[in-house]
Length: 163
Image (cartoon, rainbow, N blue to C red; front, side):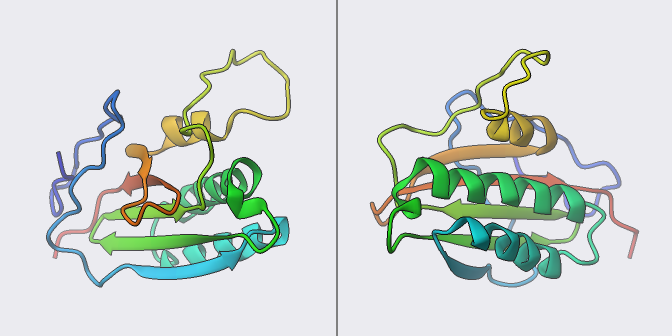
């Protein structure tokens, strides 16, 4: 189900168990803005800034940049994107009161999934997708259409001022 763009309270929807991709709203403001980054840890901050610049007027800028950071980190840590010569791509879709951020990587042997860790577990790693699941209106993971890796995406929604 797509968010009700233009309503004061768009529905919040958690991902389906199958994590299939949802349709993108018809009233996207612009085509997606994409940028490729080298698969290096130093590039995570650049991916965060890229998303922050595009969503500078959104009330969800902090959440969007945090979740982008988590997905970019996962791309270089858990996929071939972190190998020498690897890369990852970030795409940002925007509409009134809605955004979708996709992080495409070069693939791995395992499909990304939330760990659903015990909140009292103090280990440093394994919470990125749990955070995405907790903060995003929707999220999912799927193989890239070009067959060259995977994609993890999240959507955020917020109330917009009436026109």
